[in-house]
Length: 246
Image (tube, rainbow, N blue to C red; front, side):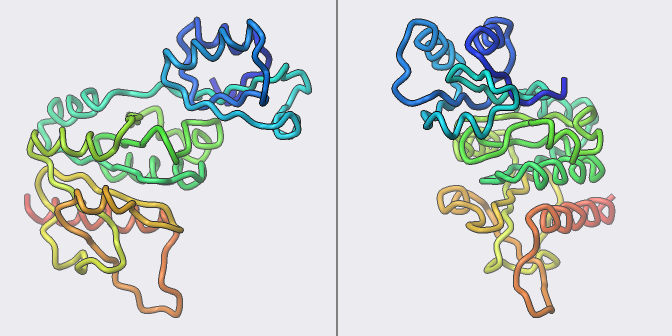
């Protein structure tokens, strides 16, 4: 399914009732009639992020011109659970290798990271519910088919998820310009690689919950990499170290 938006009250309500995963719901401000209240109840049950916006914003977003005050952004692929990603590592008899994304809102970046994660042998990608792109059609295209082969989980709280995985023996390294050189870190074993947004990097709470911070040596005149490129560089340093340790 490549559609990433559903418009109109009946269509959005049917999406919820059929079990579709709705990432975000946009509702026209001050609309409080019966059908809209029903949709909002379904959104609350599903834990959907709801944004109340002006009618002009919905008009801009609309592809049909008949949004009736509601537009749902739906996942083009189903999300997995963190447990499914964990089982994937167990079934392969490999040390877990997870990619956690903190604040990646650009769907092209998300798709590119998923593609690289698949090629690098990561067991799955974990994204937060807030401040993050969902699995839209743009992400599917940018992943170049990788979403067929690697699971993506969506969680409410990234830090809490990290705490739960730490109890299972995973340690975490995040990308940070002020960290240790990635070549000087031991990146083998059960690992979660945390990548932040290009503008803000990894958020403070998540960064403080990481065991190590890793920096990528840079020699050029500019001091930062595109988030998906930085993710790829660090993923393949992990691959290199894992391969050397065999």
